[in-house]
Amino acid sequence: MAAQKNIRLKADFDEWFPQGLYLVGEIAPVTEYQSQEDRARNRPVRPRIDEATGFALYRGTFADPSAEKDRDKSVTVEFACAHQPVPPQPVTGAPFRPVVLEGMTVAPRAETSGQAKWITWVIRATGMTAPGTSATVAARSAGRSTVTTEVAGRTAA
Image (cartoon, rainbow, N blue to C red):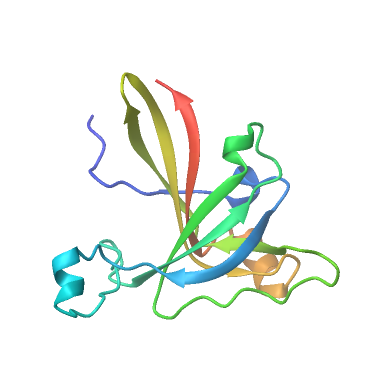
């Protein structure tokens, strides 16, 4: 049995991030590559579109305190949604914002560098909420999530 191309598997937020996830910085739109020729001709920058949903992509950097290796503690998250996601309110005295990803899916991606090969997990979702909110509790009990993220977790191949 062959796996489908560009398969996305449903994932449970609590299994992937048992100690939570924290937004570092801001959420920004993802744009398509623009060559020097395009910039010289003042062509407009186009947003990158998610091929599965047709929504624009937004990206943010998150911290994962449960990661075992230092290189896995930083997680790039991509959101596929109609509007730019708004992060929850910051916690007083904390430098990062705790979040819960909703509509979370994961997809494997093969990476290579010379002869080294590993698997990178691309995590996608449809939104994010603050931990402990009623929407978060309801989504967790229903087993769904809503944010898209990209995790650079490496597994030796």
